[in-house]
Amino acid sequence: MSYENVFAKACLIQLSTSCWTGSRSLNPAILKRIGDADWLKGKKILINPELLSPIKTSIHKARHVLQKCALPFPLSGLYLVPKDSIADIDAHLGVIREELWDKVDGFVDFYEEAREEARTALGELFSEADYPNAIRDKFSFQWRFVTLATPQDAGILTPEIYAREKEKFVELMQEARDLSMAALREEFGQIVTHLVDRLTGEADGKPKAIKSSVLGKMLEFLDTFGDRNLFEDEKLEELVAQARQIVTGVKTSPSGYALSYNEVLRRKVAGDMQRLKIEIDQAIEELPRRKVRLDGDCLQAAA
Image 1: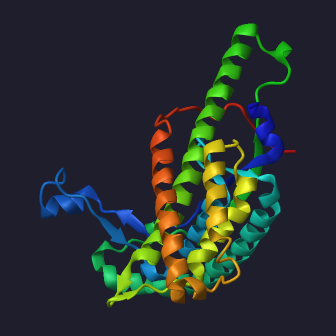
Image 2 (image 1 turned 180 degrees about the vertical axis):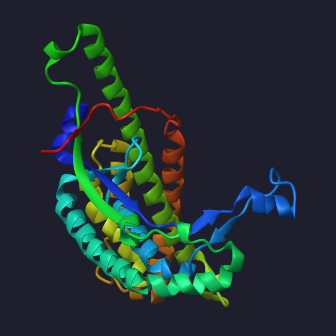
Image 3 (image 1 turned 180 degrees about the horizontal axis):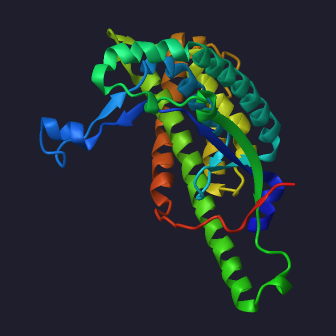
């Protein structure tokens, strides 16, 4: 396939976040009083960590959105987003951004009081210099969409440089293809493995209950796979088609009731899923395991 065509179906997204650490390394002179500073490493907590936890939770939530809806990309901090998911991800991040800044404002309001609490707790280790005056500036949350391409005008570059940049682009996209295929196969494998565990396992001598979330994750993967399969993984397409056939009989009962109480259906689906799991495991093993380290010189901000 032409790798340039991938960006007709997807876009890259770069999420940048920062959160004040609320800690600082201890002065080596202090550690020397305790023992050999070369053997001792330590830090002091500048503020109650629980005050920063809600902010960190919002940042984690944003990254989870990208991991769930997007695909990995070889360049650090970038994810590959299918075209049909761009608007939803942008909206999700917008909601999380508002939530995060509300939490930051709450933290800022309590900052002076928390610093005084730290003064008492730290004693002689307390230092005013450890605490930023413009504390709000220590937090950030932003994202941007970017595109990636080989130079379109070969006349700007010498033939040698143009050939080198084109080769780098192809290598980068081959790595992106490997990462994306591995991510989708492994995600699918985890979903199937979890479903097999619920179908075949027991709790207190009774078959495990099949919760709606178990089937929900499977159905969500099947529904979104077409958009996320940007690199046209034919092997995974076959496995997904098998899964569709298996779950056809239980789609009318998304609550999991049929699988929980219909033993015949449960055994049939369990057997089919176990065979599918073996094929998925083999498909994962077939993938190449290689790492390509490339820079981001060919990144261009999206218009």
